[in-house]
Length: 179
Image (tube, rainbow, N blue to C red):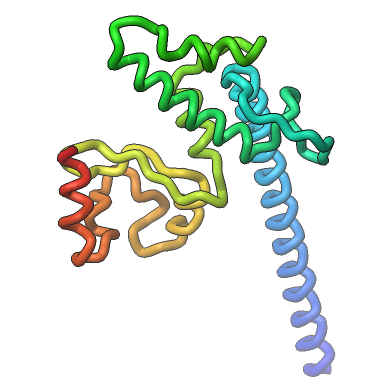
């Protein structure tokens, strides 16, 4: 009789654990679906705002409304930001004119939208820091995911990036920050 009670208790614990694991998987799936929806929405917004310079000739799954894939969109975004920086240093927006004339898409894209889109990346590890203190202000989803379970807490925001940089590289990073 004692063995039967033990087996029933063991089965009940296993059943409870399986239910917890199933609920955890369900919550993870819901979270992942929300992340994908947000990423898709941000990519769509970015796709409409970044001028098109690269077009894929093949139709592939996951292609954006402009006909570009994600990599082409990000490359165009980088080119567009560089053009904006060049035009910002020039007295007029003439430096941007060639890029804008290549597309019938609107060319107004704020840096904040670009930054938000880039920080949704789970593949790339990016941080936004405040200089000269090197305090982390924001981090990409991928970077945050790696440190979520770390001894540093759930986020690295507010901590100095220098705490996470090898001492041999810290001087080079500081020099880069002075530029």
